[in-house]
Length: 136
Image 1 (spheres, helix red, strand yellow):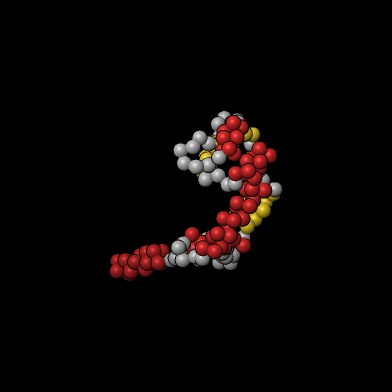
Image 2 (cartoon, rainbow, N blue to C red):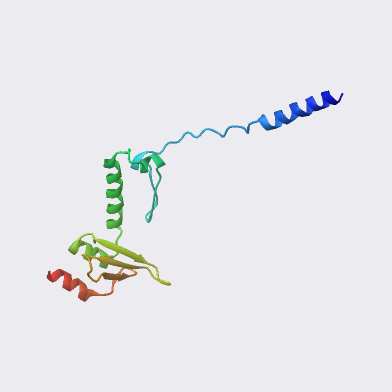
């Protein structure tokens, strides 16, 4: 009797341990490359891609295409002062984005160790620096 109970207890323990959880529901969507770009509204762009996209094996042409899309979207949505500087000098060699309380501030660098052009809420704060850059 004791052996039968031990045997039944052992079988019950194996049944509980050996029971696997149900498999997850299949996931049918695949995201590859910049084809899955979602334009939510005029100011929101969401890009969704897989970890494979970030690997070194993936084609660089499509990564460059995504970078080109980001840059063209950025250039199309600039405030007027930033647009004027962008048209005159081109894309900055460096950008620093700051968010002091209540404002958005960008510093655009054109050259190493050069003072930046400062924009606060899209308005150029140091136009004399722009004139210095245009004289060169």
